[in-house]
Every structure is written in C-alpha cells, then in structure tokens.
Image (tube, rainbow, N blue to C red; front, side, top):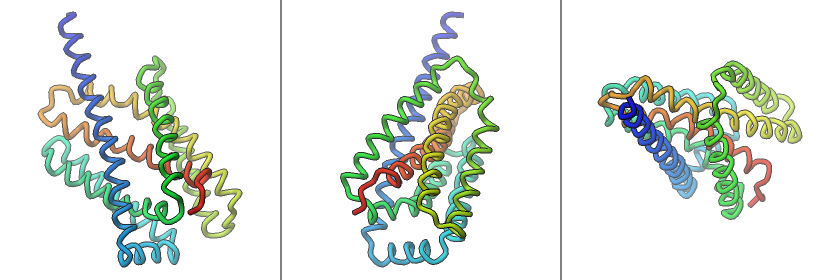
Length: 232
C-alpha cells in the first residue's frame, strides 16, 4: 500500500510540475508573439485598427477563435500529443492579439514590474489552492457568475458609459476573481491527474490542464497593467 501511495504521489508531482512548466512556457510564448506582432508595423496597424473601430465585435471574434482552438486541444488530448500541441500553439497565437496593445501603451519597466507582481500573486494563489484541504469545487458557480458579470459590465461600459472609474472597478474585480480561479485551477490539477493517471497521453493532458492557468495569469497581468502601468 505504501509503495502504491508513493508511486501515486510521485506521479502527481511529475504531472503538476509538467502543468506548471507548460504554463510558464505558454505565458512566455504569448508575450513573445504579442511583442513580435507589435513590432510588425503593418500587421499591428491592422489589428489595432480593428480594435479601435469595432472593439466588442473584434474581441468576441478573437475569443471565439481562441476558444475554438482550446476545444480542439481538449478533443485531441486523449489521442494525439502533436495535434494537442498544435491546437495549443494556435490558441496562444490567436489570444496574443490581446497582448499587442500593452507594448504600445506601457513602458518596458511597467510590463516587467507587472510580470513580477503577477508571478508572485500566481505562485501564492497556486500554493493555497494546491495544498488547502478545503474543496474548492464549491466556488465553481460563484466564480462563473462573477466572471459573466464582469464580461457583461465591461461590454456595457465599452458601448455606453466609457467610464474610466468603472473600468478601474472592473479591473479590480478581474484580479480578485482570477486570484480565486488560480487557486481553483491549481487544486483541479489533482482531479485531472486522478482521472488521467495511466493514460498514454498524459503529457497532452498536462498541456490542456495548463490552459486555464495561462488564461488566469494573462487576465491578472492585463488588469494590473491597466491599474498601475505607467503610460508609455
């Protein structure tokens, strides 16, 4: 029994390490792609023009495409690591569009500081979620309602009010909600491993498991920049 428990614990540790490795690489790739597009004057002009002219529609389309690639990654996770990886890269590349403006709006120092602060928040929340004995699945409905509410209020503000004060409140709410989402997704790694252990595509499943954590990190980063970033 002890041998089985030790083997299980070691397997979970390796799986968790792989998930966080993919998370770190995913965030880095997202930043690199966003920066590369921002440096391409012609391409970034087209993207920024679309954002300025039709922000809501443009954002919905980009998110729909990105989440389409996430669905593909989920579908391939139990069949093919290669196709899961391709879907993952396409998702990050598409979602990188939302990172382009930060390289125009903020200084390199502000981006670096926000990355450091986000990393600290991410690590603390992850550790809490991973090691707490509390079942965080009870948060699922509350977090989903909070996220939907934030999206709805953001769209209303962008279309009608265009209030910078309301936008500040939205960004604070995003940080709070995703702080809890980080903890929730960190604990969920254990549940994913319990269901997937022994699978021949455990690496692909770890890749998919990192997607939510990447999204958590990016949302906190963008909100922190919006609140504290020094305009470039």
